[in-house]
Length: 196
Image 1: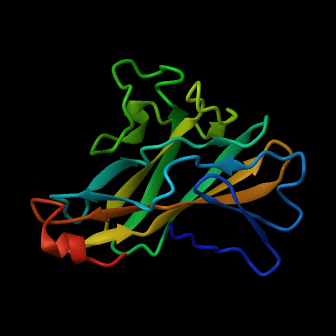
Image 2 (image 1 turned 180 degrees about the horizontal axis):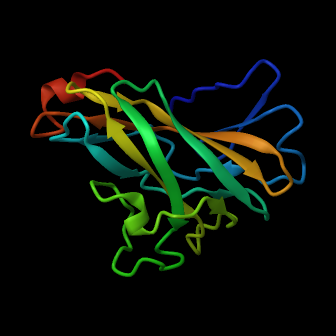
């Protein structure tokens, strides 16, 4: 797993699950919940084929985010780590459909689609579920990406910014790389070899 620590010298990082949580000075206090990504310990990579400049893609991280203790956080931003030819134009969360079915017929994680986020129930920004592997409690985070180049595009990971119910601020790094390729297959050599 590769983690990127983007905090300043005055920040504190604590690994929880797979993601790296960065708590800014005077934040993530003892009572504040931290947002975590309790997924696989590997760096996940998603390749999307047949993408063109100007295309919008909704990408789900294929896992859930949840809290390390009771409370709530509001996701205030999602940015990409080492992006090239792509930018975030929207984001949202919805309950993990295995935990709370809010979008009938969509039990699987999002993956990648052209449909805008709102139409699939990614309208929220609040996460209030404590991680629980038995109940699958948590929320799926999705971003809306815009491809800004006719070449290969992508990013190495996601940085999620949030504020907790007590006003503390933090960030969560999610090791989920995305490649938007122009080839007819994401397995094509130019797509596989494009840098992240």
